[in-house]
Image (cartoon, rainbow, N blue to C red; front, side, top):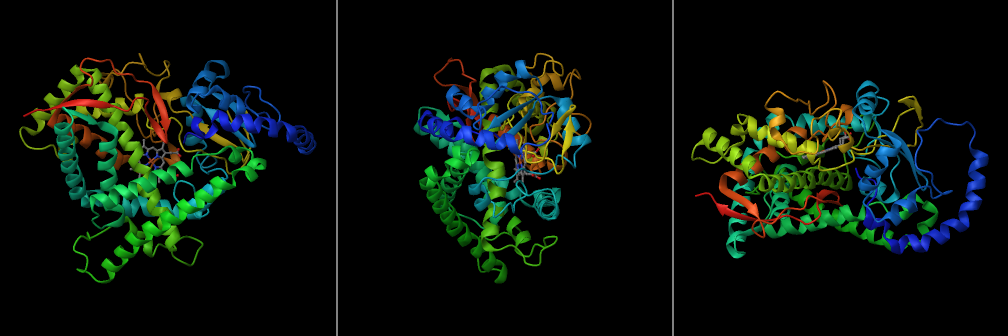
Length: 512
Ligand code: HEM
């Protein structure tokens, strides 16, 4: 995902470290020149400084990394190289190249790069689906998540969790609106609804709202700690970041202490059936307790369980919440689309509440969601890929130990693939004018979930969540701008995912 955030590269850091880096740069530059043996044909890219490469140029710009990259596209095209300190990034932004890398050469491009030291600790040395190197550990963890945690029959089992969370979401919106002159915050409420569903699926026990909120806070802190720092790109600066490292270790400790309590509660509930009245019949955690990992004798330790559960809960919360915020902004900005959607909901379900089964029978809703994921992929960069062996792409060399970054809007906003790509137009998918396979199997035109071997395993569940939440929110309320008749600002900012710069506050009016 977005490899760097503007906040982690604040001017404060770069002023101090520009001086330092230059002192040592000459020396290292000379050393590195001596050790470079054969010349690689890397894609061209913006010229950088010795040692630090483009790192300080990005920092100085004050722009989010995705914006910086977007502005380089016209000059450097669909494949270019950036040097971020010691890290070489190759940035891809065209459907052809992504198809070549992730579909045609899928196995070669299926691994992940080296992690920074903080991420090594939080991922238990790459023991998660998303961070594992392509190989037996990844296969075991991913197979388990897909076949035992996220398959269609498991998803069905958690229908009750979605229904409870949807009802709670509508109640929360209604009371927030009542207390605030009809206005509500969208992202916060949508995130919370998804978080509740994922917590139930993961731990299989009921938690009270206060507990859920405190776990949510903790998870957000974890994401903050994991945001790349200057010393991740320039390890020689690490002596200056001891405070941050200490903080990261404290957060890890807190994460373990908090989540191990939930893990133990579930373990007890399984050992003594009936003892925990809130325990449900199945959870993702159950599949992990005795998980057999290829090439390993022992099952996951408690801290590995903490890591795997955090991945499950975090993977789907901000991504889905972000989608809902952009969806409601688009529906407010396009009242016609909102009323067309409401008409479809009414004609499909009549007076009763929308159910997830209904969602399959609503082509217009499905088109709105697809257009939403095209126009606003929640992450602008896919997770970072790497090659298992030196490879070629678009005629260039891709060495191992290079970060391959995929800039998703480069594909979904490409005027060669889409008519009026800047326009939010769900009808493009209904009129037969345009089509896109979201999985990329029959061709890549948009890739909000990535494509190929590492495609998001939560794709089906996330699509159900986004469809259902939008349908319920539109069925219950009419949405309009706050303040009334104001024009929404669609500027983006990076906050783990790409959210609205001015977080969306909307006015809602109950339909009945
Ligand atoms: C709208 C919601 C979501 C979006 C847009 C999204 C997007 C993505 C993207 C772009 C990737 C990277 C693919 C690649 O490496 O090429 C990914 C990977 C992943 N996602 Fe999602 N995701 C969403 C929801 C979820 C949910 C609900 C879960 C699970 C509960 C999940 C779990 C994962 C995992 C485990 C990976 C790593 C897969 C691997 O490395 O093999 N995601 N997702």
